[in-house]
Image (cartoon, rainbow, N blue to C red):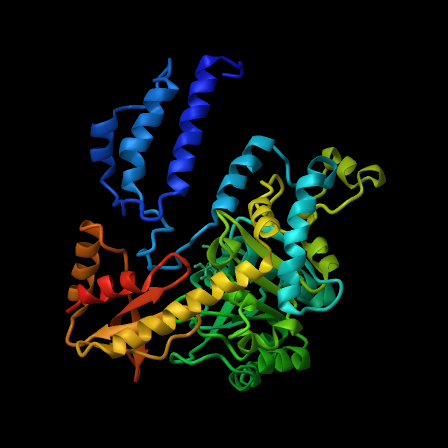
Length: 458
Ligand SMILES: Cc1ncc(COP(=O)(O)O)c(C=O)c1O
């Protein structure tokens, strides 16, 4: 397995040819999943005592298995939060793997961590947070949110002895991403959700909620989590007024910009994020709107020392990494993971190659596509906007359709290889309604793509 022979050469050529073909294909087949038993019937058992050979395994992947996946960068994949990694970032992901870098400590990963830090410097600059603010790349938004709320909880616990042994309380809105609730569960914190009824969370609502807390719960409040671009509708909470309340109440202010963070680079909407510069921590997912391959999230802290106090792991075999002789930035000390891939490297290479201006243009295109789609929806009598587009998300209804019809339409378009656009729910006047949703990330999506999809709803 570790020798260099003709099999290695052939396998490498197969892989490189596949990678080049794949990244130069702008409309890969919109694959669909098959049942596991069906896949097994087609490909057979692939892990055997003597191996099936690289050529055979690669053929099964290329001809069968990859076709049972949806290419997330397909221009008509507008479901969930799609992705559209740059070709440079994808190729450098191969380089990242080939370089076998341990991204935990500078002592081993210095050159790679340098690349990550260059990219991080740009991310931090987009937030306008004060000097001393910095961050690290994580496996995604969930891990970034978890890392931030652990840091917040530790800071709260360190403040008063009375806080030790008590369950913390976190406030967020009902539009926050499910990962916030899931991670509160992981750290065994209670969570209070403010119902925003489709609007953004404001400082006024937050203050009113805090005022209503009993004294014992007020003492347990350790963090407020606002959202900079909700996943369902692209809505940005009123960050400035929320920051006022957090400062007044002396509570950690975290902003989840996992999806919306890319839009910090878009001048047309940057003002909507005013107040972000006052956060204690921010989550941004480069694997969403900053065109990185999976998986790449980021957590940014105003005070890195607080993050280090929460996350730095101790162990006799780890001491050498923190030694003077190995001095440098150790990403593992600021988030939940020890051994880590230098997953910011593909973003760095792509930024270095293309420059940040091209990122701004590509992100603005997502916002523009949402506006174009909204106009096309308004021009079609059988369709209706649910609300004006926000960032790159468009919610719209097909007049007269039942939830089942939305579901059947989604499956049919997927089956026919036309598009993957999934329904969601939107609350109007206290009632949930099933509606359709576009989320634009990919600058390769065309106006024609939007027409093709909308026409299938007639
Ligand atoms: C606002 C928001 N936060 C967090 C997440 C979770 O991020 P990840 O899936 O990278 O863990 C998402 C994912 O869509 C999101 O949109």
